[in-house]
Image (tube, rainbow, N blue to C red):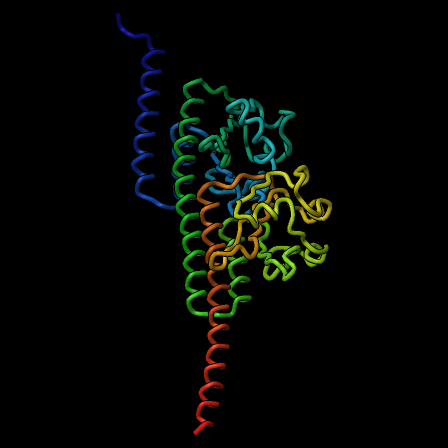
Length: 361
């Protein structure tokens, strides 16, 4: 029995999807730029699905809050239209995680959407939006736009889903490589600074700034034990307001006490954690999560490296390892400077003794 015309059409479409995905994989393998990969994805989506336009909004990697999306690449839409849409892309992320995709049959009247006049003026009929996910985390969204009111088949939905999934994995890998490069540079810069300088304050100040930039944090501070060993003094920081820094003394108890015993302490929510000091001030400062890492000089713990995040977040094992290594480097800088000062005192004493000895003759 000969296959029906509809079956032949179905087979032809699936062949086109396979060929498009195969070509996309080969093209993506040739580039190491996430924007170029994004352009390959939107171009493939428009060409294969015969659509008007496609756009990718990605989570802003420069935003420590990691909540906002920003335009990455687009094809087929006017600049005026696409630059007005990031807020919508951010708003629908929870729904995308729950439902897998969102279909707007008539974008000019759908109550879930805004700016209906702009969509009509842009010549948009229907919209299909997919999440770009990697390891259970939304990196952004991929949307496809048609001129006419259009119903998407399950095969078309599946194809766009694969595009988003494939692109998400590639983009995530590139982001990871960039992140590792930033972290490696931070560590190497600090190590070089320690070997070239004995100015502890300058080294620690540079360390806090570089960590904020490399790990996309709100702030970082170095707290060292005071002589009484009951309170800690901030000797370097980056990202904190003057008002917060002047809030009062930091006691060496609870979370701080645990860090001073050698533990790395992670606090996901500072407002509900029993061991957190100055909760009201932290809320006003916009601090949500914190990480305490002990600082050692020689074999003694002398302070704590404090990491501040403006969103509730987890720190990966790699991030904690980097922060721990940087805390060790900070302790090494302090140790080197102390040894230098001890040597200066010893040399001064030696010169004085030798001079006295010469006076005997």
